[in-house]
Image 1 (cartoon, rainbow, N blue to C red):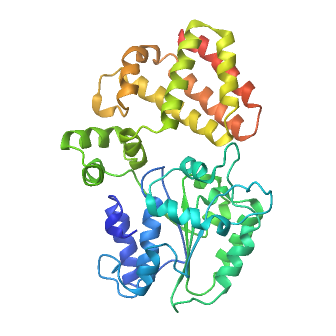
Image 2 (cartoon, rainbow, N blue to C red; image 1 turned 180 degrees about the horizontal axis):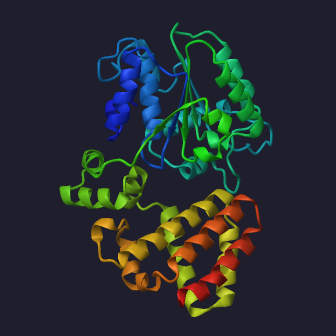
Image 3 (cartoon, rainbow, N blue to C red; image 1 turned 90 degrees about the horizontal axis):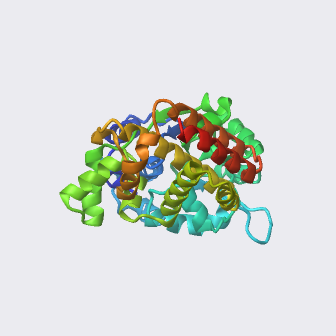
Length: 374
């Protein structure tokens, strides 16, 4: 991943380039922002620029020995840490046990969600975390001398998923970092991290990608017409992952849409038995997918509420969602929208706390009966 391959985010790119040019690279940076805005691609492009032995004013050269290794994400001075699940053997695992899958996955498409990675690992119902054992690997790798005689870079994707033991050991390394070592923490929920870690990193907020940049990328990568590219870019609301899913509506997005529509219809019709079956279907999914569904439901409630104002430029839904909203949106209004969002947020909190999922979803569906009538 080169800077020129990162979609938009020119301001952040300029910041990274300037840090290297002026030889004032911070030892720890927290690159945070919402899903799909290119945080990981930015981190990889920045790491490549740091490690490149013949970079230009604007980008890595792409052809030096360092860049050749980075073309396969196999540079000995670039290390990755990311959430993983235990393998079927049940033995303790570290990120290197998944490094081959990780490299292939990122190289095929650096814009992906946590759930895409879970599917790649075959996680099923397991929750991915960064285990305590990983802290020993971090210390071991960064205690070694640089293979190329320059910097060592460690990219930690979703550091908020770190086990408490691992997080505390990382904190010690951030307090006394090895010489010429750069930590790049790529986070979507920095508030879940230790405050002491946050205080020892330089925070970089990555905003939504500009619509025009997404449209250009869609035309280049998928051969879309100008009009289709602009329409999808707008609907993506700055999220390139969502833009790609609009083109190739993946199975999970379709499933979430069908589940949402089903719940609203069953709740409106007060079909309690079917609502119970709906809850059991959700309960059979993994915790991560349950949380993802609740996030999707929050987005749909918000979009349907805005749809009532007839301001197309403020609406970010695909064709199927828009067709449903044309009939459903009037049921989401100023009398119930706030309480609906609160109930969804509460359900998400309960799922994160490992409350019985069947109870959480059935309780929520029952509350929808009352709220939809307001």
